[in-house]
Image 1 (tube, rainbow, N blue to C red):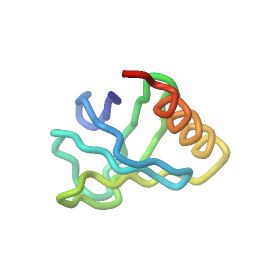
Image 2: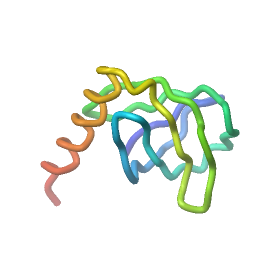
Image 3: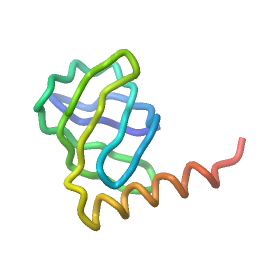
Image 4: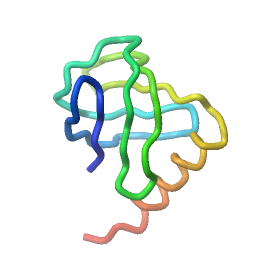
Length: 84
């Protein structure tokens, strides 16, 4: 489980992640263009912008730099090694 910080913190489920962005499910009232921070228990935190909001979740855009790629790889590896 992640935490999405916009106006305040809210739980967020990470559906997909890459070096360019992520899709999360959260009950936070996000708006397109808003600057947010996504915190993953293993990958740390990353600044993002709300790119779109759809029925499938909140689409976030990352800077696409080395930090973004490292965040994505760590989150993927962490989720792949989680048991139970």
